[in-house]
Image (cartoon, rainbow, N blue to C red):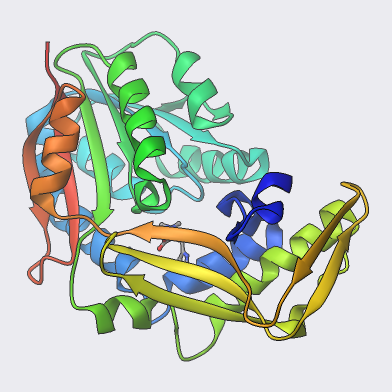
Length: 304
Ligand code: AVI
């Protein structure tokens, strides 16, 4: 983080979005009319959950970034309807989110067994319990993959592929390339929730590192970079100013108009991602999408 704030252009790791206020704001984003991602992926899962269960047969689900596990219920419903045993391995950095969602799931699915891991993805992938059903599926949905740079994405896919046995599954949810106006509206919503989410990162840093960022002195900017096919979110300094982070002993100087890159959200083409997955021994068994082809849910299988 010190490096990101000291370099030109400045950047911050997106993990600093998610203090408790940031997580609440993200939940609100998921319900915004302009933010089509969550409802489109949910609709796809509702439609194809049973097709997925038919392809995989009895299969345990390990989910990276399980959060409230709302969408996962649609998969569990499908496996339950098929009369398959239910086993779920949620992975999340938030212990409270994991405990809460697990309690609710256990109430709703009496035959479900859960093995939760409060951990980063990397550590969890090394610590997964032995497989206890004929197959395992690692689920990484919600287009969180889009928040990773290509090098980080390659690293994670290599780790995922490395932990799966040949024949095991990987379920990937990802946002697809589309008209720029649709993309930019999704990250510049009319109620200003995304702006509040972005600015909240500074208030999180203030709390965590005894900082003095003045939120009113920054503006939310989200724009599509056509060359790299990604939305870029910035915090743009409205005036020349200095911020101080006491715990880090760090002074950050801004000229008017200087920006901090707070997030990238990559948008994929199906052909390109299929090639990337294939380079990691992951073959797409079936690509599900919505009628506008705005979002993709790819069921992949680990090759031998
Ligand atoms: C978590 N992630 C998939 C969201 C996205 O769309 O890239 C984060 C987000 N940032 C602003 N709005 C939503």
